[in-house]
Structure formats: structure tokens, C-alpha cells
Image 1 (cartoon, rainbow, N blue to C red):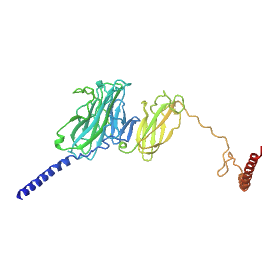
Image 2 (cartoon, rainbow, N blue to C red; image 1 turned 135 degrees about the vertical axis):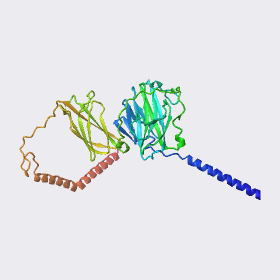
Image 3 (cartoon, one colour; image 1 turned 60 degrees about the vertical axis):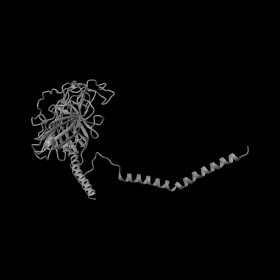
Length: 436
């Protein structure tokens, strides 16, 4: 009996110890919350400066070189999490760009870890797109010299070229997803994260994809691990990138603050100004941009002033949904060939475009004034002649009388039609029954 009690006590002790040991493991499996807005870079996307340059909600885009497109991408295998990834590209040219997001309400001294997944693609053959039959179904040309890195500015600044930014190791993950990782300790209540890329050589097709981004608080032991880089998919058939990829020298570029409209639901207004060579008030192929045209965008709670430049791209601005008036004032020596103002309706997630044309020395044809006599106040206008009221009433009475007569005789008409049909049918039967 005593032996059984001892064995029972030992079993109970083992159960308690194993339970206590399992509890921390369960807690450790709980992922740290993602401090980013829209870390999976899902829709909606908003235009930033051009219709094909868009940013996912909560993010901004800094451009250091080139004029890249930035669009949501939905085709596998370049989607790692959710429905889309963020695709930045400029075919036939090199570019440098960085997605960024400011994160607030951070306790200074908090250790933070940024993990972002990137994919690089470059190809010198636009016709075949460097396709191969096996996954990942394309083999990049590494002569493009694409470099990816991610960074944290612990001071919350808005310049990716600042010395305050702490960066991950450089990576060139051609045709595969790779996790880029960096840790930093917050020095302010706001920090900024960056998804940075640059390129050395222009090929026919150049682009990168970003997806599955997270920023989380970590313990001191995790933060001490520093920068890590880990591929997250089966390596592609391409040889591994060189251990050190030269990075081109970049000229510091002023970075505008993240527009407040990008973290809210907005629409885009794009206004183009052009030299209307044929005076048809429509922009035809070959008609150049017109610099110096001033624009005034007026809404219920916002007034925006813009001035056109020689850049052929239209001027674009993010606006809250609503109705706005866009008025144009041409430069000196020019005249507008169409209306000088337009009323537009901005819709969430949509782009609305308007264009104003002007020509040198053009003056719109004035509407000639009328020679008709004017009427005295309170008198009838002599230029307008209305039918006599009595005549109109008489005509209405005649129409009503005719309708009444048709209604009264409608029964007789129906009876007459029935008699004709019945009589015709009887005659037909008699004809059939006559002996041959």
C-alpha cells in the first residue's frame, strides 16, 4: 500500500513539473504583435504623384533616382502573404526607391525588430522575360546589380540616407523570397522603417517585390542577435549572389513628410496643362506640356495651389472624397482654349483627371450682344411669344372630347369586330359542308 502511494505521489509530481514546463513554452509561441499598419501591404493602394505609382495604405514612397512604377502584384510566386505584394519596377532604367512608414506610441528604450521579405527580378530579354520551365519559372540576369536592405530610424526621421538609420545586411535575392532582418532600440516615441532598394545596371526588365513586413518589440537577448539574413524559399537555379555587392554613391535628397492623406481613405486628382496647337481644347498626341499654368483647387475645407512644369506627367494631389472646383490661370501671353474651370468629384481609391489647354496669343471668341429690345422691370419680354392661354385650353378640351367619344363607342366597336369574325367563321363552315 505504501509503495502504491509513493508511485502515485511520484506520478503527480511529474505531471505538475511537466505542466509548469509546458506553460512557458505555450506563452513563448505567442507571436509578438505587429506594430505596423498594413504589414502585408494589402489593398487599397493610393496614387502618389502618378497613376502607376501607388502605395499601400499606411505607407509612403521615397524616390532617390529614376521614375519607377509601384503597383500591387497578385500573381504567384511573387506573393508571400495575403492577396498581393508591392511591386516596384522601372524597365529599361536604373532606379533607387524606398517604401517607408512612421510608427508612433513607442516607448523610448524599446528593442525593436524589423523583418521584411524581398524578391528581386531582372532580365535583359523583354520578349521571353527570361522564362524557364521549372520553378520559379524565371531566371534573372544578375548583371543588374540589384541590392535590397531594410532599416530602422530609431529617431523617427524621414530621410533614408540619414546616418541615424540602422540597416540590415545587403541582399540580392534573385527569383526567391528572402527575409531581411534588423534590430534597433527606439530613441523616441516615433520610429521609421524603410524598405530600400537600388540598382547598378539597367536591363530591359527591372523590379523588386516586398511582402510580409513586421515590426515587433523583442527582448534584450533577441536584440543582441543583431542583423540576420535568411532565405525563406527553395533557392533558384541561379548561382548565389556575390558576398559583397558594391553600392552606388547616392546624393542626399530631401524627403517630404508622410502625407496625412496616405493613412486615410483618399482619392487622387491629376491635372495636366498643355499647349493646344490646334485649338480644339483636347490634348492630342505630340502636344507638349505647358509650364507656368497656375491652378487653384478649392474644396469645402481645403484649398490647393499648383503650378505646372515642363514635366509631361500631370500634377497629382491626394484629396479627401468630395466635390472640388479646379480653376486655371494661363501664363502671360497665353489664352485658354477651353473652359477655365472644372467641377470634379473625388472618390475614395479612384483617380480623376482634368486637362487645361492654352495657346500663345489666343483669345476666346466673345458671344455677340443681342440687339433685341429689353423689357422694363415687371413687363413681359418682347422677345418671347407664348401661345394664348385660351387657345391652349381649347386645344386641350378638343383632345379630351375626342378621347371621351372613343371611350363611349369602344363597346360597339368591339361588338362589330366580334360579329365580323363570327360571321366569317360561319361562312367558312358552310363552304366546307357544301356537297361537291
